[in-house]
Amino acid sequence: EGARPPRLAPPFPPPPDSAMATADVVAAEGDTWFLIWAGVLVFFMQAGFGMLEAGSVRAKNTKNILLKNLLDSCLGAIIWYLIGYGFAYGDSNDNGFIGSGASGFAIHSADWESSYTSRGYDWAGWF
Image 1: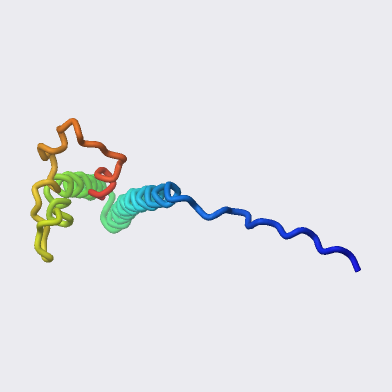
Image 2: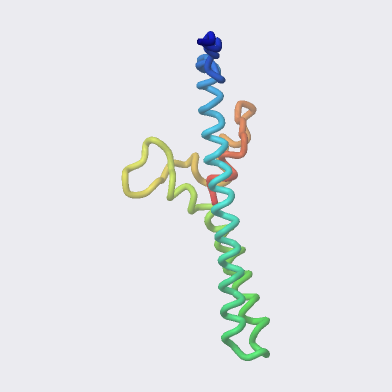
């Protein structure tokens, strides 16, 4: 009868409080990555739709269709950046139907204050 091998400690010790804060940061950065990736997929779908439309028309109309799709993407992104994000998300004082907080709209005065910091969350959010 051999001796039992020594019991090993768990591979990872329980996380300290600072690790929990780090986990929150990682979760927030994962959310940011997901929003950016979703935006990339939307633009790829727009390109695919342009190819579908280009294949559905005569060759002489292809440039016109592709230009319309490009303008649709560009104008849609600009309008969403300027006013859509503010309506979609707003701030904590809004009603449940539509956002109207001034801090959610583009070129808000708070963006120019020295205390303003960004880790990409505000850029990812408008996707």
